[in-house]
Amino acid sequence: MATRIEFSQHGGPEVLNAVEFTPASPADNDVQIENKAIGINYIDTYVRSGLYPPATMPSGLGTEASGVVIKVGRGVTHLKPGDRVVYAQAGLGAYSTVHNVSADKVARLPDAISFEQAAASFLKGLTVFYLLRKTYEIKPNEVFLFHAAAGGVGLIACQWAKALGARLIGTVGSAQKAEKAKRAGAWQTINYQDENIAERVSELTDGKKVAVVYDSVGKSTWEASLDCLQRRGLMVSFGNSSGPVTGVNLGILNQKGSLYVTRPSLFGYVTNRAELEEASNELFSLIASGVIKVEVPESQKFPLREAARAHQTLESRATSGSSLLIP
Image (cartoon, rainbow, N blue to C red; front, top):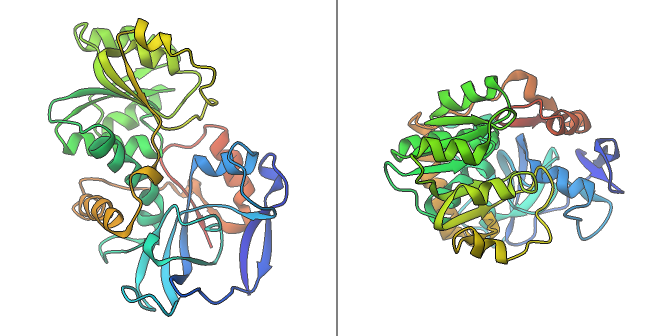
């Protein structure tokens, strides 16, 4: 028997329940993985709350984990039982001791990277890859703004920006988080609790502002983000931790300088095995060489059955960096 986390109705963390089940055999193009570490991502709270409702109920949760292949479907040739692997965006159900996923969503894990490092960084690292390398290609010495710089995605972005020789200005919510972002490689930080984001960006850039803003916060930072952009700058809205951006008047883009806006997601950039390999190879080389460090505090590792407590902690903004469920 295996254990997974399910929910039968939308709501707060209390709707999450642990249930026992018998795993089905993997389909022809799937692999069955015994999970060793499971990534917790903010998007999981959107699925649970109903912002991104699943197709059917009851539903599993989670899309990212690392582990060992225990069975392969008949059509799978590039993976075998015993392989150390990591996967993301492979359909809901990663909050589980055993999970069947499409083999094309699975990357083989180098020995130099632990299961915990992999589950803590894969989805977030692939996100930073597509943001900084594909949505807009960050150049050496380029100054840009990245919101929530001490979050899981943000800390990887700080390190990746430094590796690219770029200057990331990161927004944070406390002095402690500012210190964390700086240690990770942020060039400058802005504490949005007591500083005006657009004014500070203007000061830090001698009035030039920036060509690109990466914003996963959403509703509460939308206008400030637009005000940080140069003429014809690009606003990259890739999340909505403060609530979704709705009712946008497109005229505001004209008023603030003929701006561009994109709402990307990983699904639009990593769509097949070749793209997954390109992205994961670049990420893994940075982690294996120590350029990107992935450390999960013990206080942010939760037993699988305590998924509800993990969500409460995440939504209280008490975490910094990545959190994990351990089966």
